[in-house]
Length: 361
Image 1 (cartoon, one colour):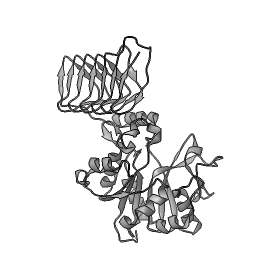
Image 2: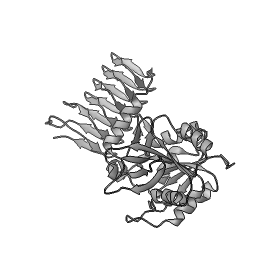
Image 3: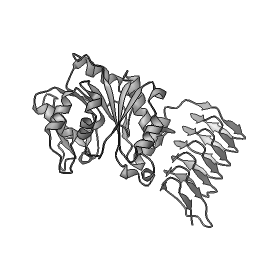
Image 4: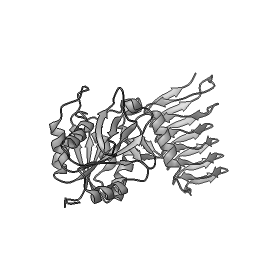
C-alpha cells in the first residue's frame, strides 16, 4: 500500500435495533450476547487480531452510555477506543462522514457492530494492503437479495454496480458488513444525495468510486457470516460460535453429568443436572434438577431450576423455573423470570425483555 498511514478501525454501534425488540428497548443490540460474549466484542477482537488497535466506535445518544461502560477505553482488548456520537441513524455513509475527524487521511476498516464473520478480517486486511484499491468490499450469496445492498459484476468480474435493497435484484451477491476504504470514501460520501429512505447509503458512495474510475475490489466470504439483527439470526450465531468451544469446567458439579463441549464458569453450581454441549454456563449460575441442551448459552448469575432449556440464550440474571415443557428457540432478557403457572401449554417460544416476569397460564 502506498499510503503510509496505518489502518484505523471504525465500528458502527448505533441504530435502534427494532428487529430485536423488546430486548433492545433497554439494551443496545450490539451488546446482546452470543455464547455469553457481546456481539460487539467479536468485531473489536477481529480488528485487534488483524493488527488494528486504534478504533473509533460510532454510538447513538440513546445507547452510547451503555456501550462506553461495556467497552471502556479499549485496553481490555489491547486497543485504544474513541467514541464518536452520531446524532441520528442517517446511513452508513453518514457514519463515515461523522467519523472523518477521527479517521483523517488514514485507510480504515469499517465493521458493522452487530455482524459476526467467521475467521476474522486479517486476510482481508492483508489483501487490501497488498492490492492497494480505493475500496475492498466483502460479498456473500443470499436467498433474499431485495433485503440487502446488492453488488452486480461486469463480464470480467469487476464491480460494476451497487444497489441498496433493489425491488428487482439482478444479483444475489450481497454486501457483508465489513468494508475497507482509503480516505477517498469521504469525498464520495459528500458527493451523493440521500436515498428515498432519507439516508446516505454506503452503496451510493462506493458506486461513486466506481463511476469516477477508482479501483473497487471484492472478496467472497469463505466461511459463515451473520447479521444478528433478528431472533433467528441471534440463535444461529449463538450456535455457530458455540460450535467452536473447547471444554472447560471451572464450576462445581454435584451429581451432574456434562457431555461434550461445555464451558462452566467459575462459581457456577450444577446440582442433579444433565448438560449436553455445545453449551456455556456463565459464572455464578445456579442450575438444579435441570437439563441444558445443545446450543444453549446461560448467562452470568442465571438460575435454571426444575426446567429444560435448549437452543436458547438466557441473558445475565434471568431465571427459568418449574417448567413442565422444554423452553427452546428462546431469548430471555436480563433479570427476567419465566415460571410455571397453574396450567401449562404444550409448547412455548419466547422473546421477552429485560426485567420481565412471565407467569404462564
